[in-house]
Image 1: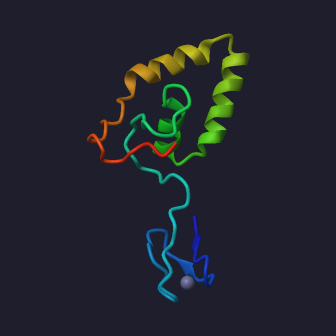
Image 2: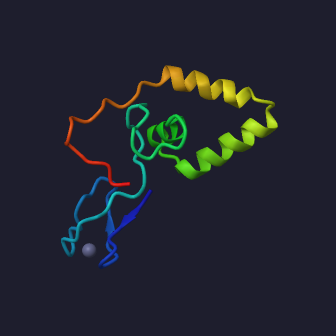
Image 3: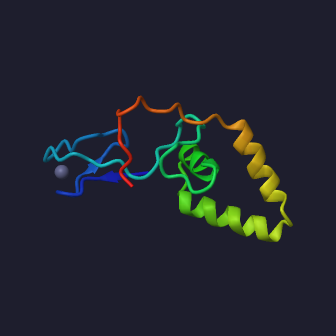
Length: 105
Ligand SMILES: [Zn+2]
């Protein structure tokens, strides 16, 4: 994966946080691989399983959700059982301290 500065277009190493040419901050591009497998409290649709898998593997959460829904329809509920297994197996994100970050939605 190549990262390019959005201001000047200079090519950056993947781990760069700031452009070495113009100093512009480089925004994080989507979920980064290698995150722990946890179900976040923010951004979940049902149980947070899809977004947990997407974040942990660097996938697009929308793609994961579409595959999950289609799988649920075409697998006669097998994906639903797998989803429940992940739901039970994947730990939930530790709750934020009260007032640490108020809900933005
Ligand atoms: Zn730049």
